[in-house]
Length: 122
Image (cartoon, rainbow, N blue to C red):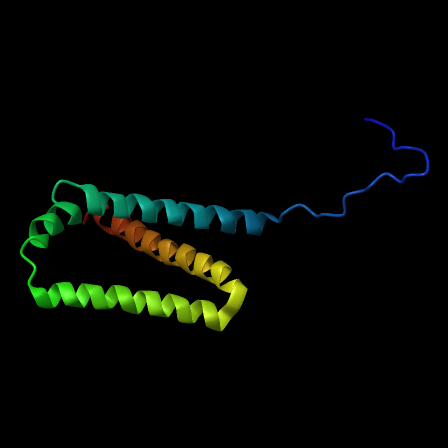
């Protein structure tokens, strides 16, 4: 290890290592998010999944459904703008945390489904 320059003090790290509980919590969050991502991928891209089902029905939509989808997209955009104006700069961090917890909830659902039925597809 190199010696510090004369007149300079060696910096000593005062950071404490992570506790075992925080490491276990982070691991559980990771596992739940992976279950959520894998479960959604199977649900969407399987042979009789949502992508195949909705692809066939997309051509059969009437005008009320198309207007409803457009209004929902506008409502999401307005909610996003309001959220950013209300919470300011910290809204990006809040939105990221919200998305993470939402994916963890989806992961918990798919983990429960795997434990009770033995399959992610139910």
